[in-house]
Amino acid sequence: MRGMILAAALSVGLVVPALAAPYDVAEKDIATLQADMTAGRVDAVGLVQAYQARIAALDPQLHSVIALNPDAVAQARALDGERKAGHLRGPLHGIPILVKDNIETLDAMPTTAGSLALANNVTHRDAPVVARLRAAGVIVLGKTNLSEWANIRSTHSISGWSAIGGWTRNPYVLDRSTCGSSAGSGAAVAASLAAAALGTETNGSLVCPGAFNSLVSLKPTVGLISRTHIVPISHTQDTAGPMTRSVADAALLLSAMAGSDPLDGATAEADAHRADYAALAGASLKGKRLGVILPPPDESPPATEALLQRALGVLRQEGAEIVEIHGFIRPLVTSDEEGVVLKFELKHDIGVYLQSLPGAGPKTLADLIAFNARTPRELALFDQDYFEMANEKGGLDDPAYLLARDDLVTSTRALLDNTITQNHLDALIRATEDTVFRLDVIKGDNDGPGASFVPAASGYPHLTVPMGYVHDLPAGLSFIGPAWSEARLLALGAAFERATAARKPPTFLPSVESKPDIAAALAPLPR
Image (cartoon, rainbow, N blue to C red; front, side, top):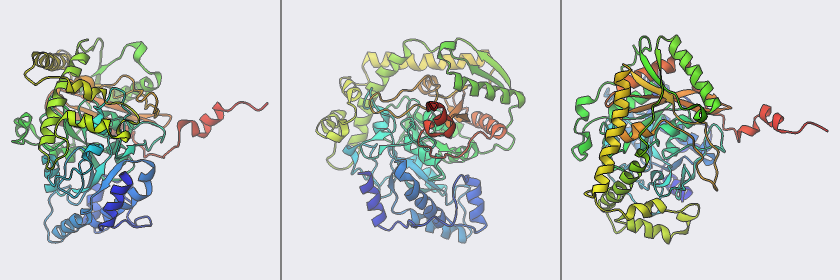
């Protein structure tokens, strides 16, 4: 299916050079791309064609791109015309990005959430977050693979797999996970298949693939960015966010993405809180108080802990005061409460979304369950037990749902707010995730302790920035703050990024075990 979609896109006029593009897009940030367009070294059409060529060359081993936009070159040509006429829309003018395939665009591409049930879901409508970026001059290059239904169909799911897109590979080490659910966006940006990408998160789906792919990834405050025309899970926790190779690029995208949407009540305060997030020139760690969340000794992986201690040393050298936070323990019932909230909201929210779609396709969660049951590819690797549990729930007026939602949000916000206030902190920090785990079709995901739960459940912002590597496997450092503190977190992340320059490009290793030093150690001595 993925190959068919790409082939169809190519057949309607995409220009994908057979040879390497003359302009090298690898690892170039948005400012460099913009400067090169200003200097005439490349134009937007050239950028689109260069990224298309790179996708054609590299993505067959990554499976990160589901579909290419057949109108991308035409859109680039129009933006080049504006540039020649002296009209620039801003720093994103002519910049090609990829969009996670649960976010609608008006282009001639379906929005599938990775599911065959939505394989023909061409809505010809922009999600407001895409419309804002398009108005700023962004070109939608195509759609990225994801964990199907944003990883909510099954408790036994495999991150990065969808029935349409297949299994996304990590460009750093190909037999390792990209994490979910913004797997394709993470792998594609890491491999420079686009200048940046959009992802979404309910709990971890921006920051985990960000950390696993050595990216800057920001989960904003819920309500800063519109969710309209995005395939939903939970209106309490869902948000879109930028995935980039630098903090400055994430800030540029966020500046365009943020804002109120009359169709999304959660965004009522967004216009009042949005800022110029790209004002990072004076970003500094000097005098900042950062609370490091220390896991219990038996939950601290030695390799990741060593990277964290090195990062703390850099933060101190740059003038930050590090405050150790012990006993940062989320209330025991919150995991169960989140499960209740997500099941109730999934049933309701996905039904509202499906009913907004044209045509006679699935209109309820029950319809999706029935479709999957009669479609062998959908259930070939794992089941749909989470869908089935959600379908048994009642409406959003159910007392069990209301109690769980209110307690979940209140308790997690209190934990973050009290910790930050009582310790006079600028932000909380911790390792974003455990070491990148191996792809495993039998056991599925094998992830360890991570930083995503409390900011996800509270709806508070969470930024991950590259921290280093364990045997070429990326690790990220998280910056977590109170509501609407994105500008502060981005400034802290920018200062840390500047001090460490931790990110390095991927090398597409087949496996960690294929590295010569490790292979030699694994081999027996000659007898």
